[in-house]
Image (cartoon, rainbow, N blue to C red; front, side, top):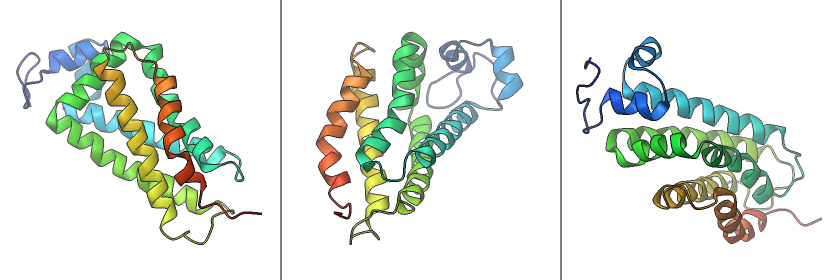
Length: 180
């Protein structure tokens, strides 16, 4: 294990992670063994929250609305804690090892979202492919918004970006619903 201040792969130090998270190095080591552990725990918790929120949405709600609603929460949290969130998001997106863990976790999110979408009663004839494709589209929108927000130095409005992204993909997300 690297010592505080020592470079820990990919040129990111524990000092930088602790600073971005707003905690001391001592606190960091009390909870995490490595920088990857920070990302894994954070993303695991976020994914579980997104899945729970989707499960709680009304079953008859348009998929685009349900997915936009559950994914807009974490994005809005970025805006609410702009400086701190921007440092953490940039660290994840710009550090190859952390970005790989981010994408790995999102694969699990996609599985959970797809399983939840498959439970919805109003899927049309393409129901076998739909849940995973819909979850993938929604997470691509999430990633696009996250990158745009980060690239704007936190000045872009995540809510407006989320609305734009989901307006573009809503026809595909909602087009497979059984017409009644």
